[in-house]
Image (cartoon, rainbow, N blue to C red; front, side, top):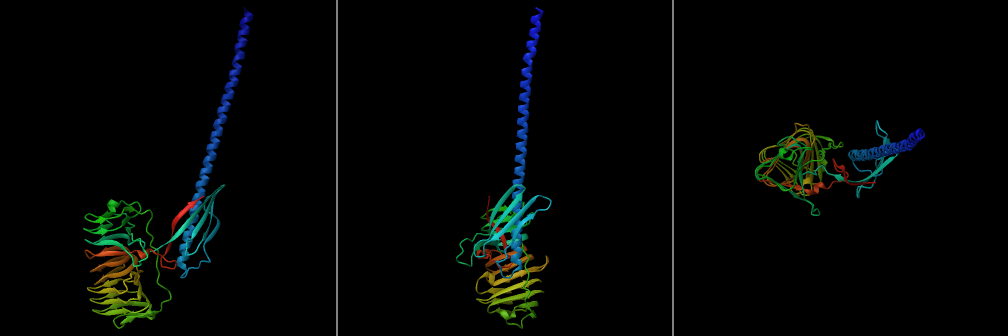
Length: 405
């Protein structure tokens, strides 16, 4: 009997040992699985982080290439296509990221930026087709305020009959309340944009007005590239009533430009370029007449002061025939008047601009604050101004399309 009990105890001990071994194997398998899972997750995280880093490096390459292209456009009076930007294995600070890029193409077609970003073993390549962006992509583009008087209409138009897209956009970089005020019965036949992150219902006041397009916040601020006067203009004194007409030989730098009461000056032929370091004062009833086939470009440091019944008349009815660049500081004031239709463009990103015209306005305005004074006036945005030229002032490269691999 005692022998059987001993055998039974030995049998139980023998049976428990395989269970212990089995448990150890199961735990080993689970542990190995967890280790494998953790390793794979860690490797996946490393690969994802490397891919994100490589894409960030590729994006940095695009930004650098665009910056260098814009600097090149600013520095060269005539575009030199033989010296396009290129970079190889540029290291980003405080990281293991590097990038390379090259630019191919020409002004007649499309410039393509090919960027490559690297992060360790990861590599991302991005291709960007660029476009040229004019300083007049906005019909009315401002840093702060736009005000349209009652009944004012802003609509698209074109001085170039080959252009069919006359859509338009007015907008501000501001996010402050009441930065865009459209008074009773004003109409914007297009889109209205506010500053990045702005609330359109706070920034835009349009009670009794109509906006046919969309209201939205800009994805990035409007760019206001600096403009400088030509450096090759000789100093020639002053312009006043003693000068009845201007021709290309009169192009130069002047301390002031003043027309007395009922005075007039004609721009008879060619392209006249004036750099005025003081003020332009057009007194009562005085007129500037730009004849058909002629143009007047003014780089103005001081103010433009227009008295009652003064006028700027552009016979060729092409807005760029009168181009005004404001070079002054944030106190610059530009007050333009026209007895009849006004054709002209104004780029003065630090100036307050007022336009008073008894009939319609054709062109575009870029400034700090804009005020359209006359009621029931139509502001015709010239869609031809969107067509940028590689050698144009303030032209910028912008992304058109992109793809990656």
